[in-house]
Length: 166
Image (cartoon, rainbow, N blue to C red):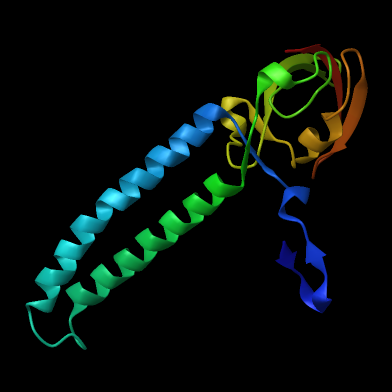
């Protein structure tokens, strides 16, 4: 549980971090890469220390910043992995849009688009992956084939009709 201002508590599972098995494996690989970087940074720190006075040693300060950034990334990624809820397509309900669904839409009655609904950690609209917490992701969750909905964008309202769900 997370403590909020005013003493309230929030259960972390209220906003789960959905991720595919492939995405989880990518995160684990990324963590390992950052962990391997520790040795390189430690070597840079030792070399910088050997140069003498640390208070005016630019190489030392840069190595410490790199170390701090690297450790922060490791911690962030490990927290994501720990809190991740893996999307298991074998247990999803067929015919209903949910995290992990690939959905084909007709947009404004004209063009066809296909999006996979993913957790925010894997969202990449250029690859056709939209977050379940994005406006379109939120609007289509729980809908069925044939249903329509609208999403307000900064420029206009966009109408979506669900053509297929897989």
